[in-house]
Image (cartoon, rainbow, N blue to C red; front, side, top):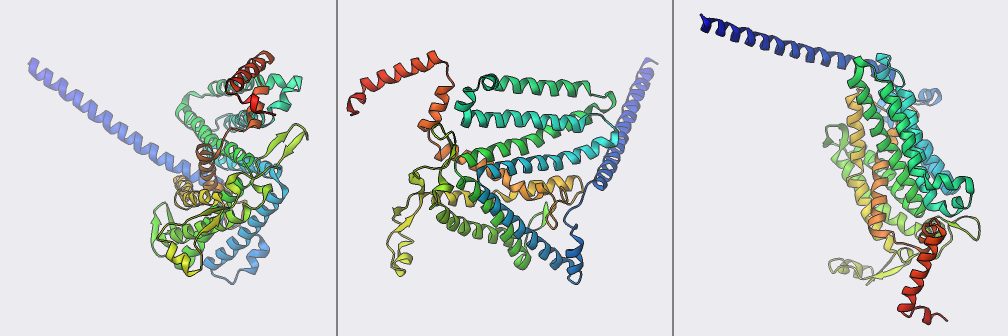
Length: 447
């Protein structure tokens, strides 16, 4: 009897477990269906940009097929963007930095709008406000770091700004804590999971956009050539990959982007390497483009005047043996080139091989939310993020490359750090340096 009861108990437990399992399965299926509905509804609220064109242009191209119509529209606005880029270069470093900031804000807005479309479905509070607050806080921290690095001497001479320099990171952390507390207080019991997911969404957007724009600004300070050449390489690779893919593309490259082909990938890569070498050779000849941007105490302003480093002076190179027979045909035995051209080769290979994966990443992101573009600002291209998805990855590589292989300490940068020290610390450093120079008989050599 007891065995029978025990078996019945086991049976009841098994049935309950099976029922619970079925219930969980049903719940998960229902959640999937609801999730798909959320994504579909969200996609309807977002702009789809590549099909949006001005009415005049649309009517003028009405006789063309959709394929050639898209080709013409993309071509027109590509050349307009290239012209705008050249105009910004002419405007100088300040114009470029302001543009980087504007692009950063627009890219952040396009990413956050996707999250906001999901958030708005539930009527949850504060997501957009919190996102923009974190953007402001992040910019205060990163751009404050740049100002301290390059303008520390000037800022320290101003009494009311010295406090902001000394405690910059502490103030930044306090601002972040305010946003963190604000988020916790905005939590709604029913939507914890989705709110924490969107909190992570905001931070990933900040990582992708704000951090990269900070690195771009640092690259500009190293010399305009470190900004112009990498950006131009990505533009060249994007344009030439599209051209080669449009006319010769037959072999699919990756499932995330069905229109991308091996022919476009290889053709764009080869074109970018050649373009990078030619552009680097031309730009290395102008001090305005190769000199780092530094603050001059004597002039009281930023300057770009310098004696170009060895990186931007013509050097004579002996080519490898397998190349020499080809060069002899043209009557050449040695190569005269700028060392920067060798570094540009590394940049062009990265922009051709790894750079496109920034676009593939963005394509996967858009497919996850069933949208075609991030926005509709640029006809034929989509949103700002659609055009800068590869640029951010390239900016990180350039900054890492400069730090690893190019950058060296300069007296100007070291002095800026010394001026930030307290007077007694500056004296301590002075006597230590003087003693070291005397012990090595360097002071005695100075006339």
